[in-house]
Image (cartoon, rainbow, N blue to C red; front, side, top):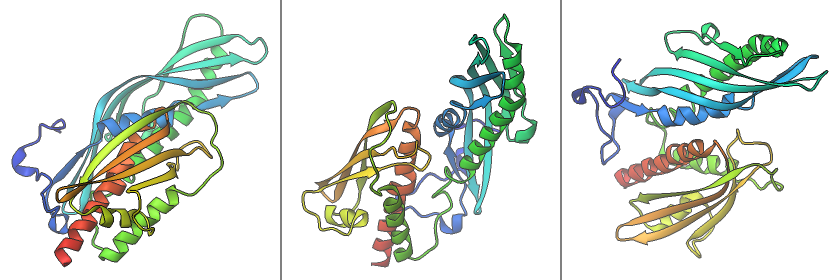
Length: 294
């Protein structure tokens, strides 16, 4: 299979200005490489296994090499992924308190093999502590394969949202957008203390500021700004980021400026993808349908 960006351009239809891909007939392809790296970090780092002898945890993603993509043709999805992954793990003996380190290598995670058959190699630095290595080889390997399965499920569901164009009525689509925003903006108590970063995104929409504002909330447009608490479902429980949406009018368009503080480290790409695919692109599709209907 050709690598991302090396496909025959005669067979790949770029995104059209009018957003039309009738009946999902044309070949489209999305690069999932960057998104996948964030997801693999999310699912693998932090895995913990424990028994009466000791406790081990995957502490870092040392290396992730490869690529992933998803293609659509005639309404069917085709997935390609090939990864070489190296993880660092740490362990401690319960009786002596001795600490040990090691590596986990996944040399070939690809669509050619079932997750349960994926090779997972565990090694440890020289010295005692083989009992911890055995723990990682058994319980640790099982949890790693489970996490890889979770990544593949997300690739085939979360990543592909919006790839197969919706056919529902405009009202239903708008209701879905508002429901997603509502689910993510419920008020919550102060989140736990975790390492976080700030993000900034901008997006242009071919509509007036008031119209765009009304898609996000039923309140009247006052100061051209919306401030809300927001979280992804897979973030630590009770942790919310603060999102500020500024609606800046421009000639014939509106620039939406998104500033977010409190995004958990390693979740940045997932949040960007969520807003881009689940909100921005769906809203643009809604606006295009509204224009065509009008």
